[in-house]
Image 1: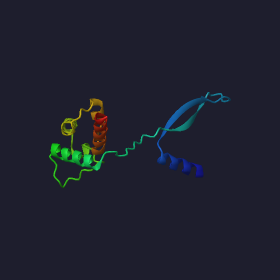
Image 2: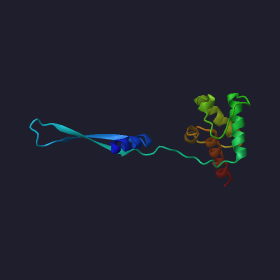
Image 3: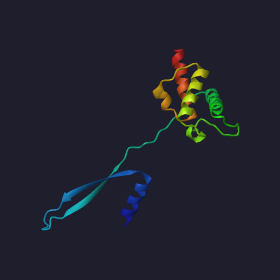
Image 4: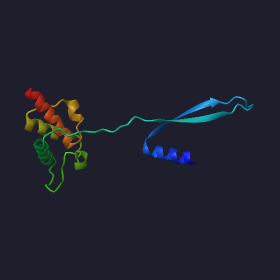
Length: 135
């Protein structure tokens, strides 16, 4: 009974994939099969990002996003805010990236622009491009 409780607790703590295998059981005249289950942990899909952008860059990106999306000053926009949370669709995101390119004097690759989902990611990408441009 204790092992069942432990198994259910661990299943809630981490996602598992269930593999089912049919193994023939010998010694039975009716040819029955037994089922066996194996649990394999699935790979973790967590992403961590450590903001490396300067606070000034993050604030400037926030201002541009507010302007592009016509947001009030009462709307809280931080580095962790997702564009989708602010009601931005894909066209809005493209316009935001174009505004950022114009403001910072950079050109962002399309693949890199499509990967940006938050204010902080945009600020980090800008810092990287500005640093690359300076070198």
